[in-house]
Image (cartoon, rainbow, N blue to C red; front, side):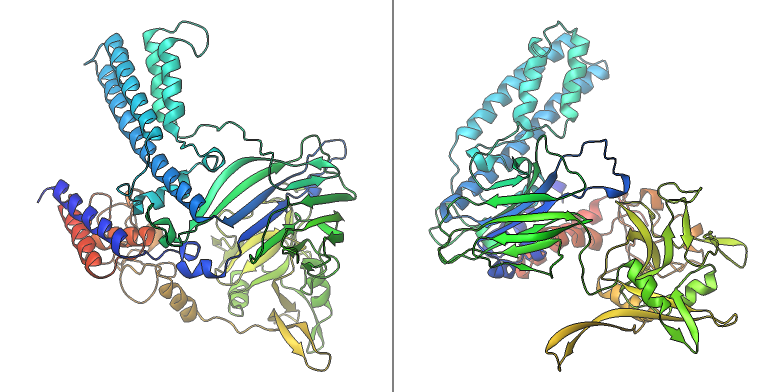
Length: 619
């Protein structure tokens, strides 16, 4: 059976799936997800001022980001579906164009084609595809132009949200064709290029995967200002579309096929000055009838700043306490969105949980058998194992911190110390082999991260921001050489007498190794040798007698780990030259495109299995 026939067989199953079922996606694409979504969700986040490296002589402009997801009318949703189909078809046309031009460039490289002849042929191909692209953009989309699963996958990463502004389909091809035509006509720099230079320039264009879109200045929409300077929206990014059933709706169907479309936008405040001190933020949404429609606005500040005064039109908003770094509100009674004015300055939210500094004080006030406590320090492998045995899946503060005054201070790993003064050194096991307790890539100084936590599930260290306060903490009691440890986690409890919620810290119930393993098994982590131990915890994944740290083929499928595209192949399954078995290929497609139930499931499974078998096998 030929690959072409198999591919046709698989396409038939997927097309029938589009016609007769709705695929199951992750939460964002779950049909039920949108049953609870407001008509408009608008989130603004102000980027933080880096107080750790703040220099009053430098200038820092305010900036932030907006996430907006709103429901579109049936008419607007139909326009989006047409834009989606056209944009996707442009991407397919672009691939075909690049393939044809790439073949000519390859012929020149291989010496089988003349440079000038190749340029002439490229000019003809470019003109032909330019015409095809213009015709595609002008043509009307019909019911025959079905939205497919491939399009849905493509749109998540490639749809250009600016198309929603003017209704024009966009893609890389438009700019690519324009640049190639400029190169062919010597118009791109006002100077003559040799034939070889033109081919080099065209070759670069064929490899280009991104073009900056012209900046769109939006005059309509909300007004957001800080200290009287209006924000400017740019760098729009498409984020999501749903629900899937509405996205797959036909263009002639008059039923309810409204879509929720989400997008990210960067917000800049030109010539503003983000300094240490007091600032005012103002927001006005233009009059819009939200009658009978739920809206939700959420405003948040970066780490190290808090709101000191909030005045929302109608005085109906929600914030966490008097010193909060966020607040939210909805529409008012006359069905228009609210405006607000809010003052903010430097500070940290006063929540009920303990940040690192508060945890230090809290631990020092605890006693065990007349011994005072302190945040735990870990200086041996045995001590680490003991602490790990106490933890559940929470994150926990321990007694390490980044001393910015240390003579050995450097980012991200120089100058770490223990609060007890013990040496902060690489932990050794049996005074021989080193044991790394930092998580992969940690410490990484992702912002002002100067306090030490343990990730309770993964049992690794991470540097984090000291004023975060949703962690547990580990306390150590010095007891004449035999130290005692306790792990505490926050727990919200109801105070019946005062009729309020209170935050208490209680002893954690530790996760056993078996419970950790079972959780990962349930989440689908691989277990190559089917011994019941997921590979994350299995020191010999394929049970071949070679520890994984010395094994170049952990899943024993005949493909070295460095070349294995599909690690964790189940034992005994044949793989192709990339290390992928039929079941892994199928799982990958299912996870990306949704489940394939019933008859379509059987068609897809059979097609994929046959493709995997025909691909060159390796045992």
